Each structure stands twice: as structure tokens, then as C-alpha cells.
Image 1: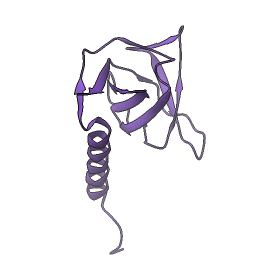
Image 2 (image 1 turned 180 degrees about the vertical axis):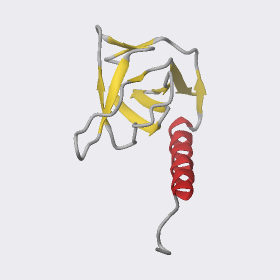
Image 3 (image 1 turned 30 degrees about the horizontal axis):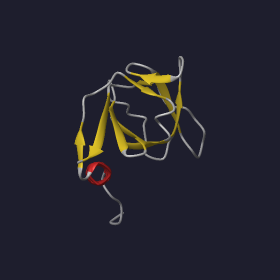
Image 4 (image 1 turned 120 degrees about the vertical axis):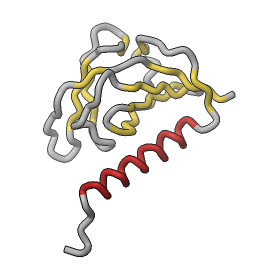
Length: 121
């Protein structure tokens, strides 16, 4: 039992990893004006799930940060996102479900927030 990690230690470790991943992805970039929608063709590389409330998409030089409309507790960095598209854009308040890659069990519905572009200076 001495080798077991407590729940609090595991949570702290995950939060530190998420902050490190976010910092690396946005390093040297400046935030632009948030947008309500992102063309599905702009989200060519992603999603990169940072944590239960942050997802990144990449489009060439830009990194699009989405701070979800609310916490998505079932969202894990290794999940697959199943997005309900209504047209050719992903928009604020559109719904998605994270699906566990191993078990293929879907999690609860979550909603996107605004998309903030980050570009290199």
C-alpha cells in the first residue's frame, strides 16, 4: 500500500501536466479576439484535450483554444471526441461526447465555449 498514490496527489499531478501541455502549446503566441464558431475545415489538427475544461485545435499557424462552457468531468486527454455538427462549423454551445478510447464507452454530453485564436508574434 505504500506505493499507492492518493487521489489528491494524482489530481495535482494531472493539473500540473495539463498546465505544462497548455503552456507548451501556446508558448510564444498571442491571443486574438474570441470567436463563436470555428470552421470544421479550420480544425485540421486536433482536438488536443488539455483537461476537463480546455481543448485545443490547430490550423496551420494558429492554435485555437476552447474553454468549454462548463466543466466536462468525463473528459480525459486520451478520449475521442464525437462532435454533433450542424453545418460546416463547430460553434459555441455545440454538443460533443468524449468516448473512452479503450472501452468505447461514451461520457456525458459537454458544450463548447468560444474559440480563441493564438498566433506567434
